[in-house]
Length: 141
Image (tube, rainbow, N blue to C red; front, side, top):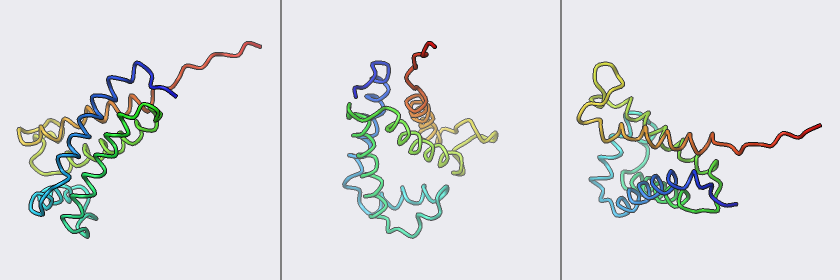
């Protein structure tokens, strides 16, 4: 199964971005991993049970895996779109739940929230890959 040409730019851009982010986190020290975990706790309090270094490793491995999946041409776009939608959806949820990230309206980003608000684009890409099914030919009777 080949990548549809219309999906190529979506998969390359998001895959390279996420892969680079994950590779950058592979050697996180405990302090930086703890900062990321503290941010994540705003939306996902269950993560408090993990050690900061383990959280950092899991996050980096997840991003590397997702980024590589998006860049792998033989994986179906709907499958990687589902994974990207789940990942980006959790990032958007994190953005919406973290105090100080949004203006008083709860949607528009503050200066501090802009870095997380950009994940809405990843969510849109994931949904486009997930929902863009092949057109089926009608069978004439």
